[in-house]
Image (cartoon, rainbow, N blue to C red; front, side, top):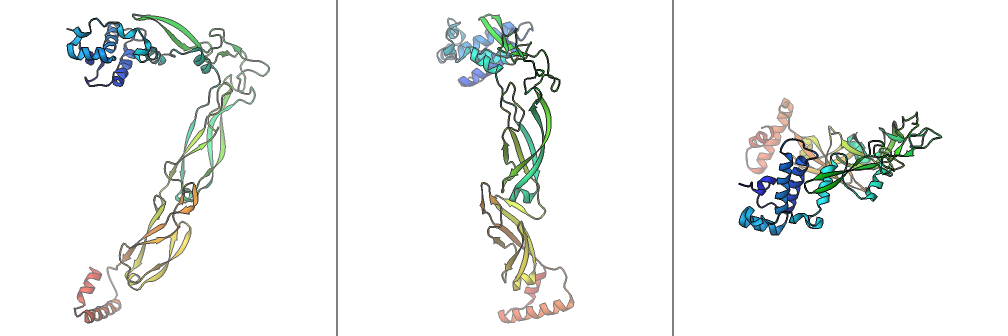
Length: 375
């Protein structure tokens, strides 16, 4: 009995066209005869192709769902008559071969591969102190990247000589190999082994870079940290990545910022949070205090009768808005009231007098007042 086509591709019966295509690509890479030399791989590959041939087309899939394999017994090969109808059969085989040294491509694509190539981007993680992230400023960093060799100007050839065109690939950087499969001949394109895809051969290598055209260089850079950055902010430093190949442009350097925690301050968006502790007498009577902010000491008025966990706001003492440092958030202070566990006899005597006065005024005893104060 023939195996179920959905089971062959490992997809559910309600899988959409894209899921079926992805499953086919994955299995075709694994069992293609040019890749898999195990016994039975070719038969498995044929089975995978047959399943995809039927399930990739809405009409044949519908007949298969209704009548099973008998409903599509005359449809063999129909799905491979037109590459466009297949949704890119050549593209599928390009994907199969790309993991083994290259895929199919047009002459224009081949020339592009052997032409100028942009250098790789680099990443650097940078830690900042809390206040550095808030106010920004200049920061010196050290990076290691590839720079074009100054002796040969990036050509890799000894001064006075020039690279020659590779005779193996005639400068394309790629070689072609025709592979026969049960479905016809397919062209496999791979990187030229003689020139490693550059299209050029260096006969007299530059001594300074050993023919590579670039050297690993460690250098210092000064970068500007904008005010208001936060964890995960990414800065792009143009052209400070690795040098490009064959006169291609350099890549970029990406600096990822991470902010150290502060013992006193926390950040909430563009606001800064902190706590301030006052005595119960200061809370009852009110007072003026100097409190610490990221800008330094600032005077804060504690109104009489301030309650525990009252949040007081210092406007424009928070974090500058990223990209608009003139606009700043606020500094929010949570007021904590320090109630002593013990008092001196003199303090207790005064408090009892206060409790009695309060009790006389309200017509109630004063013990409740003291009880609440020191409980």
